[in-house]
Length: 127
Ligand SMILES: [Cu+2]
Image (cartoon, rainbow, N blue to C red; front, side):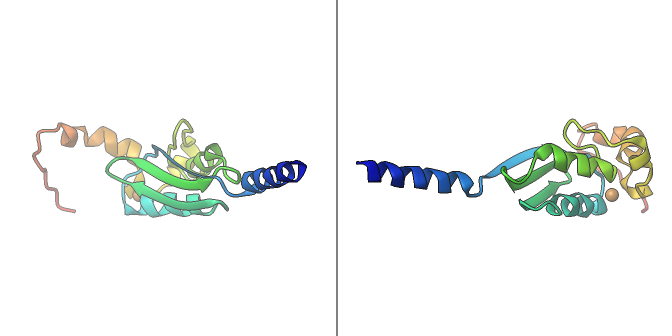
């Protein structure tokens, strides 16, 4: 009986030491393909992050990571440091101002509000 308990305890210990992979999706502000690759690159730079997929349309980042190695808040801070608002962590003006023009989601949003009226009309602009 005692031996069984020891085995059970050993299994419990080894399980708790193994990776605890979870998935979390949170809002990240971005505007173009470059934002997407920057955001994903920074996220994947964390040891323990298994995948990072940015959805530009939905403005969300889906993170698959090892809970024991990665703190989501740290990833959000790192994303904010390169200029993108992530979760509750807002990018500083300084970080934001370093973004190239195509990535300036704050200004672009203000200018292009009328594009988002949901009418389904596609306004085409010469790029
Ligand atoms: Cu961009």
